[in-house]
Each structure stands twice: as structure tokens, then as C-alpha cells.
Amino acid sequence: MAKEIERKFLVKDDVWRSLAQGTKYRQGYLNSTKERVVRVRTINDKGYLTIKGITVGATRSEFEYEIPLEDTDFMLDHLCEQYLIEKNRYKIKMGDLIWEVDEFFGRNDGLIVAEVELTSEDQEFEKPEWIGEEVTADPRYFNSNLVKDPYTEW
Amino acid sequence: MAKEIERKFLVKDDVWRSLAQGTKYRQGYLNSTKERVVRVRTINDKGYLTIKGITVGATRSEFEYEIPLEDTDFMLDHLCEQYLIEKNRYKIKMGDLIWEVDEFFGRNDGLIVAEVELTSEDQEFEKPEWIGEEVTADPRYFNSNLVKDPYTEW
Image 1 (cartoon, chains in turn orange, cyan):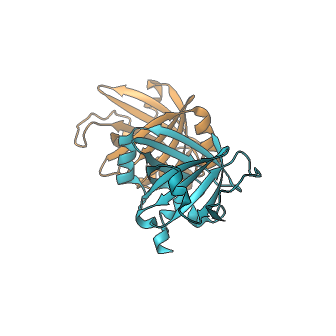
Image 2 (cartoon, each protein chain N blue to C red):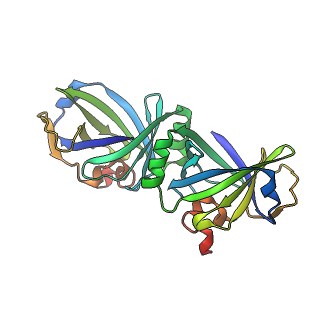
Image 3 (cartoon, rainbow over the protein chains, first blue to last red):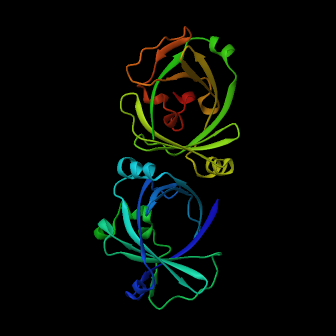
């Protein structure tokens, strides 16, 4: 089991676009309740099944398994809750940290968030100038909630 | 993806007990809705994660992955819906078919059901004399429902 410690921010401008290439993500949920998230995801041509426990502070238990792409495609098309999340992810290395910028499409079109993974909850880090307001604690920005309550309907 | 075609019956008496050794199963659910069951299971010292779609007639799409036992133990103890299912399973070969008899414990104590897996919905087969009433179509006997509405409370 991994422990995931992440902080999430909005972005101020488009500076991040010139810093990385985007990778296509398509994901859905077999359960999107906060106690037991079950996520199905394709990243380019690979499939993953991920189980996450409840978030305590910025920390969450997480189990991830690579599974056949044809399985994830079937689950996304036939078994997952509607709607799916479609986004491009840009991984941007800044010093020792990697910032992940997610640019959403479809029903979450227009939403862009940046996440950084930390090794402890109180770890200090430098914020790039294009990083805006922190939204770590706002559940509306959880991908599992963007399925049910998408950004274009806020 | 596998297609699972199963018929389920109650048992009339204890004759089946002399026909096989039981194996210990412990299982729980990360989702127990009929549209997208996500099951966590340990069989002796192996762990499995299983996803099942909606049942149409006696047929259901099913994906199963073996995962580390320490992962399933954590999920069963900390992430799954309460309560867990505990049972012994007896696999009994009769002609070309394998009958699986599940003897439940804990909150489903006293319940015993026998299942047979078929290759088509209209396959004919011989019922052993210890097989009783068919309950294939009764959702109360789904393991995913026995978690929420256990036999001892019927």
C-alpha cells in the first residue's frame, strides 16, 4: 500500500503549457464514495485499477494494479458510473518535485488544476509563479466528485 | 473478461459434507450495488480483486485479478463495507460439473447454498439428490446482498 500525500492548486496563467508535453488520461469510477474510491483509468495504452481509502488531512491509502487495456476499456464503456473524466496531464519537474497539471475536457472543460506529491504533510516547497489558490481541502475538485458534479455545471 | 453463468440452489440435507473438504473464504465489498460489484476476497493465503457487471438472466461479466494478500487483508479490515462474508466452500465434482457448496458463518450462520457453473443458460444437467429449491433469481442470496441484509436477520 502506498500513502499518497498531495496538495492541489488552481493555476494563474498558461506559463506551464510550454514546460511539458501532455499525456491523455481517461478514467471512471466503480465507486466514487469518499470511503472507498475504485478508479479505472487508461493512460495512453495502459490500463490501471486503483483503490483509495478515506482522506485524512492530505494523506490517503492507495493500491494500484496494472490490468489489461481491454479490461479497462470494457469497464469504462459499460460498468463505470457516468460520466467519465477526460484530461491531459502535464508532468513538470521543478527542483526536486514534480508538478502534475491536469487540463480537463468534456463536462469538466475549462478546469485546470496542478498537484504536487509530497513525502510528508508538513514538507516545505517552492511554488512556481504560475501556481494560484490552494484547493486541497475542497472536495469539489476531487476527480471522483467531478464525475457527478462537473465543472461546467458549477 | 469472463462470462459467468451460474444457477444457485438450497440444499436438502448434509449428504454433500462427506463429498469434499472445505476451503476458507473471507470476502468483502468495495461496492455492492448490482450495476458494479467490486469484491475483495481471500481464499486460504491468496488475495483476489473481482469486478462484476449487472446480471442479465443467469449471465454476468466478470474480471478477476490476483493481488497481494497483504493488500486484500488491509482492504477487508479497513476499506470494505461492513459486514464481511465468512464461509467455507466445498467443491464437489458430479459428472462433468463442479458443484460449489457454500456454508456461511458469522452474520449468515446457518445458510448453505449450492452453485453450479454452466457454459450456456439452457444447458441441461443432472441435479444431485441433496439439491433443493432453486434460488438463482432471488437477490437476497447474492453474496453482495448478504453483507447488508444477512441471513440471521431474515
